[in-house]
Length: 299
Image (cartoon, rainbow, N blue to C red; front, side, top):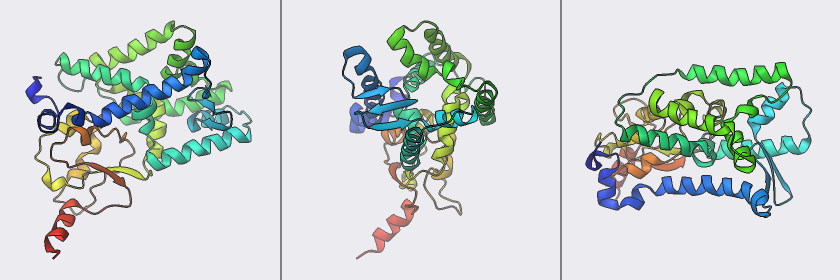
């Protein structure tokens, strides 16, 4: 793929490289900043945050708990303290607001690894999707993490969770964590395009369930301006979620991307030179064409 036909090439030419990567850069700042906050304490003795993404204490008073970890703990038969339950409810409310899979694109450090794998896959010009996995496979893996927790009375998934292994590895030495992360990278490059995050990771499955009812949405509000360049489909980690929102000639006039699989990564906003996409809320369902007609009839 040459620079002239790379996704977002027109956007870069017209608006500049920074504008065409604005949301991507913000995501990287978010991911690295969150990782840095957790590492400041053990590495530099600056304890803004104690713990990890599973359970943390911020500024010595705000306890946060990953609701997926809490769910596994309940299946394991653990008696949870009220602070852990409250912390999980806070996190749950946050992701119900901004979108569950925002965790995948704005928080999870493994996303940087899988994005790098997708970039290399394109540079190597590897065609097609590779091995395809049904989303049901991810649901089965998610269910198995709960079943294993119930049978072993432990949060067994956290022992092999790549995110947890990465945090432990940075602090105490990577060891086998390198093998897990390398395996995910090579899997996404040579076996299945975005196979881990999009289809197999049980954390992504869990937060996708939360995202189906979240408030913050990407909308194709100006979808009548779409020129079928397909750039949004090329950069989207879950391209199947875009098509329904772009359908103009249907009875469904809702331009919102409604699928819980959407990560709200905003790459479609970045690369679209026609400004089709933007952020809005699930309550704003007006079609862009309808709004344009309203403007035309206004005096």
